Length: 127
Picture 1: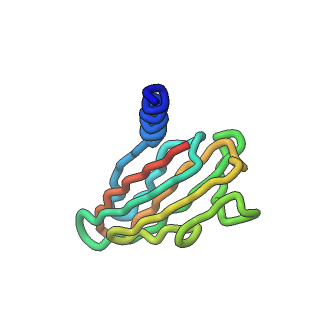
Picture 2: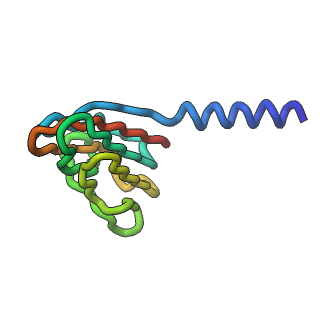
Picture 3: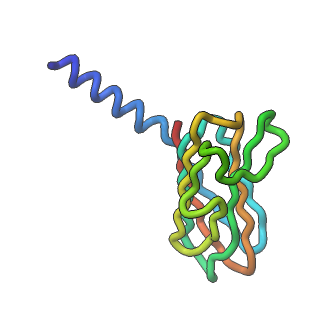
């Protein structure tokens, strides 16, 4: 019984440590590219309005070589986006992406703001 409890604790610890988080801000009409997430299978983006009215878009891009990236959409049941394949940035907007069977080697998120707003972006991803 003790061995099972230790194994459970180790499994939970490993699962929690596999999640990564990045935060940054989009200020006005700027483009922000978030780190390449080669090992991602689940991605969550949360927008928090800090000033002005949050506005803009986020897209997920994929690449085979890590150099040339293309916008990804929901194709062949390998990528699932909720609610859509492009996030409209607004206060408290949440975007979820699930990647099945890793069709590309590299992934990155690109956010483009508009107007004179400031939005905190929190990205979490896990294996």
